[in-house]
Image (cartoon, rainbow, N blue to C red; front, side, top):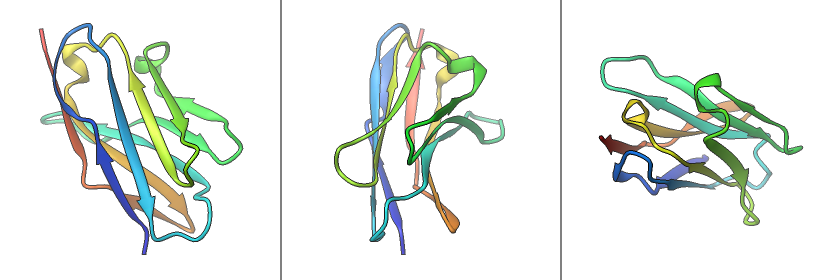
Length: 114
């Protein structure tokens, strides 16, 4: 059973940066897709960014140029570098992975104050 554990969330000021981390355990194989979703208060969960095992990435338009997703040197780790944070980035950020089926982390909250 794959388990995803996120870290790095917290309270930040607008304009600051933050790096979120996610480590997957329980998989003997490299997960084909890893990424991040977020859910703001009162809104549906939305895709933020994905990275595939071949290194290709996908970003939602609202974060392009500010967010960078990358995979770590350790197998099945993924990072989300968030720059120039805005209050509208406030959300719970969930780690996501896919290999045969989807897996979700418990989420790490990011709160951006203006």
